[in-house]
Length: 244
Image (cartoon, rainbow, N blue to C red; front, side, top):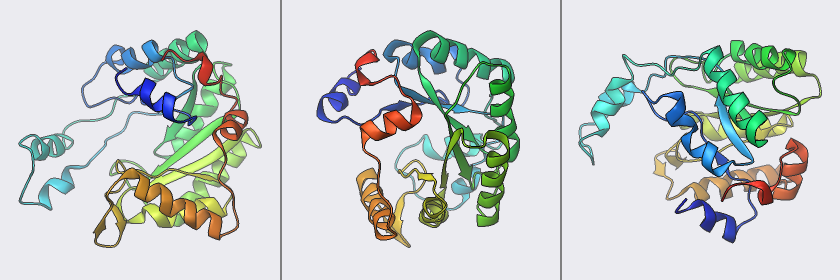
């Protein structure tokens, strides 16, 4: 609540909160912030998975903080819990309770079928904002043919009732985003997904990556949606109906 009102006052952007939280957090802890701020959009992970980032701990010898290496290594034994019951609780709490829609985070093909499952039960409704994630150890790999397969599967399951989006972690970030845009999909960038702006060059901010992908998107003849257009596309409730 210290920063969300300031963001809202300075921009009309759609603010998307996480329900994924951190390792070991309960669903109550993961829902605590969204229940208070009642955003237009939150993430919703569509399946339990191993989320392995321990390989990064072996690549570096110097660390800025004492907690960094143990945190990465802990992912070897941990997992990200998103059971059917947990997913349903998030849906009922946020969508049914506050009109918050979801960015359905799909780390593998089976997660697309989980979205369809909840749609068939009438617990969620279109349009579905399908975010496909590539390159996390434990999820689908960062190969472009996997993007095609995920898109083809989503077409089969959702027809015209969804928007495809994607991102890839690390060095594959911009390659995947450019391909997804050329397929008619949406894109996501940020330091959570990659620390780099180019090979061997660290990004100075999230804005660096936003500017780069915007330039790429516009140079291939596409147009970035305005916040108002995004709200209309995704049937969001509007910034005047949030809790901050």
